[in-house]
Length: 292
Ligand SMILES: N[C@H](CCC[C@H](N)C(=O)O)C(=O)O
Image (tube, rainbow, N blue to C red):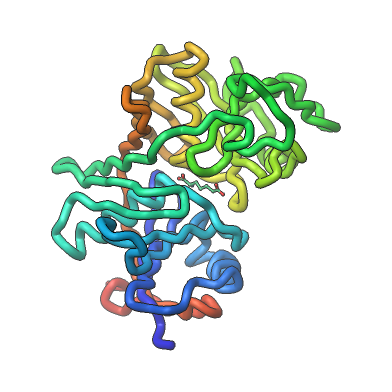
């Protein structure tokens, strides 16, 4: 099969590869994902693979892979990169995508920011999913196990199509050893599909400062669905209103949990370079004109 085009982009430092798999019958393999992640030039957090539409009324289907080769149901920063790439290609500014989490409407605004309707949050313990029944997922009792992180307890859990656990802290989020206990919590048996782990500090009336250890990707500079999950959990627990600024290491995102229950994520995306790659093996080459 001929090579496929890709664009290396980022959403507030969340490293994204947008792969053009339209009009192709193959898909990006986990082997290719791990090979691309192993190369410092193409190291990424998620691949957003654009495929031909599966449902009438949608523009394209977007398949999401984490850098460990696992598939993700949703990726807010990645969707903004997809919108920016397709707006540049088509001249359009409004799109309807489908992912395994459902239908996502998105729009690029005049000022270059991009809003993605990330759909409705899910709170039921089986929707997160959790391995044990919890009636109130605003704060679940999670025995963190053999690590000395006494201040981490009672996370809020939310699904944005993918599972999130939000640990509320009163101290600076940088004072936590997230790279040490992130993987322990990501793989905690309470999360049968693993989970994205976020520590969140309320730093203003409607502002949270967060850091995220992502399922299947590790520490990232920003995580769009974690921003959505944190904002919804904050509103749900009375910490903020429904329009929240989320300050991540890579920048600030705006999240609105609308009265119709949809969660809209707004922020920027950045193009870095383009190339072509083999979706089976991950072998790639940079486009020459983009090297200029
Ligand atoms: N970085 C992505 C989240 C990817 C989620 C993925 N780590 C998973 O759920 O497995 C975002 O901006 O929403």
